[in-house]
Amino acid sequence: MRARREAALLETDPNGFYQAARTEFDSSTDFADRARARVVALQAGDGGTLQL
Image (cartoon, rainbow, N blue to C red; front, side, top):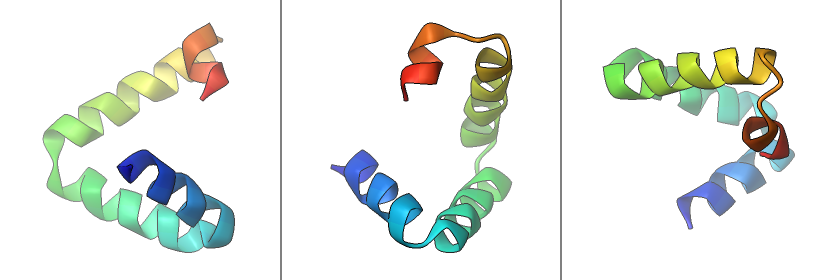
């Protein structure tokens, strides 16, 4: 459910999505670590990440 809300926010308000993600990134080391790992996977062409 949360993923759907986030996807909808990304489509309707990309700036709001970025701001919410940045707030989470700054306040949660777990989220920041997962985000960094996802960027590395994306840059490496990981199939599962590209499907997101």
